[in-house]
Length: 255
Ligand code: ADP
Ligand code: MG
Image (cartoon, rainbow, N blue to C red; front, side, top):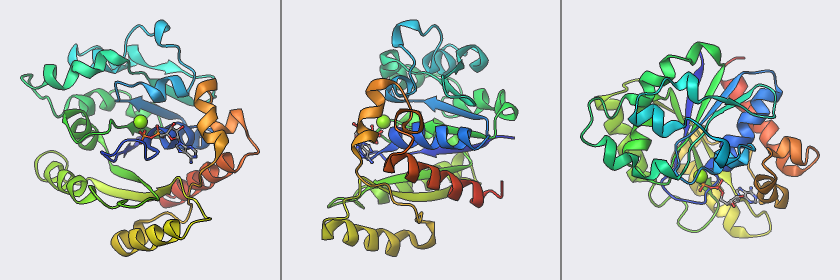
C-alpha cells in the first residue's frame, strides 16, 4: 500500500512543488514506485517533470470533478519510477465547482484508493491555500510534509495550517500525521537562516528534518528544462540534499 504524503503550506513560494518533484525523483531513484499528484492550477509540478500542457488529455480536474478514473490521468515521466497526475489551469475553477457536490472533501481519497497498491509513495503537491483542494489532500494523506522557507515570518500562518489539520482529523481523517517540517531556501550566510532554524525546532521539535534545503541556482533552473534536479544536475548541491531528504523519509518508514 502506497504511503501518501501531502506537501502543504498555504504560503506560496516556499518550495512545495520543488520538494514534490525532487523528493519524488529521489525516492524513485532509490527504487521506489512514486506517484506525484499535482493539485495546483499553476501546474508547476506537471511542467517540472517535463509534461507538456498541450499533450494532457485527462488531468486531476477530470478526476475530482468528472469522476474520471485516476488511472486514465496517470502519465509516466522520463524519470524511471516517477509517474504524475497532471494539473492545468482548468483546475482553477474546481473549488467552486466542487462546493455543491456530493463527497466534495473525499474525492481525491476515493480516487487514490484505486491506485494506491501500485505505488510505494504518493506525493500530493498542494496549492497555496487551505481550500477544498488542500482539504482533499489532507483527507487522502497519511501525513503532511510542511516546507518552511527560512525567512522572517516563517512561522506565520502555520497555526492556521495546523488548525486545518485538526479539523480534517476531526471530520475526515483521524489518523492524519505531521510527517516532517523541511527548511527550504536556506541561506547559510545570514544569521536569519540560523534564527529561523532554531525557532522552527522550538515549535516542531523532533519533527524537523536534519536535511536543510539551501538556496541553489540549479534547483531554480531545473523546472525550465522539465527535469528533476537529479537528472538536470546530478552533481549539484540541490541533487545531494534531496537525496538526503529521501533517505530520511525512507528511514522514517523503515524501507
Ligand atoms: P511553492 O510550490 O511552495 O509555491 P516552489 O517550489 O514553486 O514553491 O518554489 C518557488 C520558487 O523558488 C520557484 O521558482 C523555485 O524554482 C524556486 N526554488 C524553490 N526551492 C529553491 C531552492 N532550494 N533554491 C533555489 N530556488 C528554489
Ligand atoms: Mg507550488
